[in-house]
Length: 209
Image 1 (cartoon, rainbow, N blue to C red):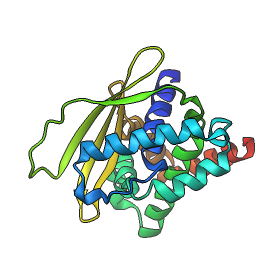
Image 2 (spheres, rainbow, N blue to C red):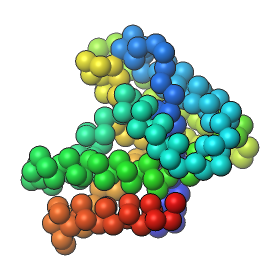
Image 3 (tube, rainbow, N blue to C red):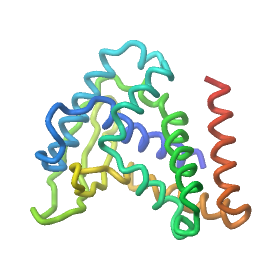
Image 4 (cartoon, rainbow, N blue to C red):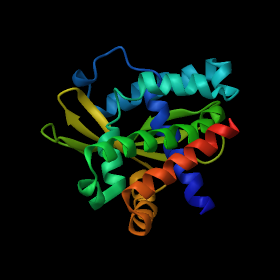
């Protein structure tokens, strides 16, 4: 369990860091690997220079994530994938609540990981894709002190440019990491039970901050 939490924390770090500083170049004119490289590098530089984020200023981190993550991440697809087959059974209102609580869970639970950014750099691995592909995997390594961290991204091509919908750390995909626990909760207590569980975890995390 601790290993899964650690991997999820690292995954969320990559997810959040990609959105903290939006590239001035429009996403749709960039290749997916160029987008990942540029934004990741800018974000790491930004965190290094921001004492408030390094000190764990949750409100500032949350504000930055709300302003900058959404342009780069398809949270709806990410949530739907994590909920799995039960997503279609959820009402539009339930889907909105699931998406909101899941986003809050990711940001709140793992925002502290941004305080660990120090001397890291991001290196891209060769992109295996064709020009006509609408879904790709961008593979990177985050290097600094200690062992390099494998950090990969699944992206989809949309009318608004490339969007991230899953993150892989050390062989573990974020969505898959949550899918099993979400399915167990829904099986036991229904969709509203999962919403209540996520809300409870978010409320507890907020009380500690």
